[in-house]
Image 1: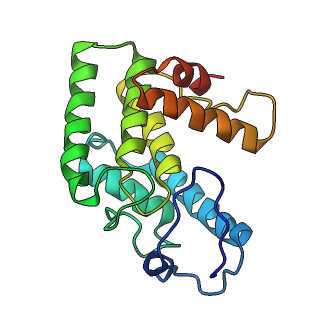
Image 2: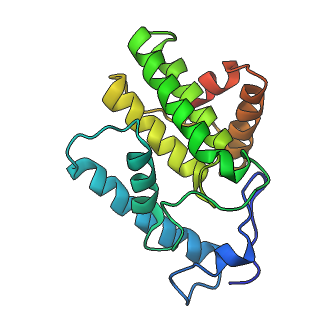
Image 3: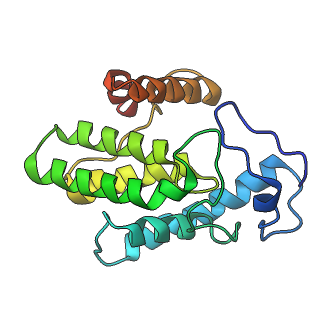
Length: 195
């Protein structure tokens, strides 16, 4: 699968990362999306069956990514080892993740923000760090929903699913909200996640 088209705002894979595709007969973006979505469905099933664990841990975060994409990509569940069009320098990932997990634990324990704002801030920072070669947005949204349900006692976010428009419009709204959050304005992201 040499010519892969990425939607605006997506993280391109390097040629070396593309070589780690486990399913050799995939030839189109649509086929790749289908296999990844099937793998994510299996991860959702795993989540329902698993026993409680510390979700604010590097181990859980990496395990979730591996469960989501591990049947499709060899690098699933491992921190990226190259720089991308977004994210911290790859060598900073473990330290930045540790800081985020400590911050999130503190925000929850101290009630620093309302539950939805804790979740939005957590989500934004997880996307900003950009832990993995790919799948970061999907992983961060699922991690955020787990945080909401298991640690904050709230329903998962709708992630713009109630907005009118096509998937590209919803994606554009999401990316615009993330960019505002980059400037420390979480208003639009707070509105988007429950729309």
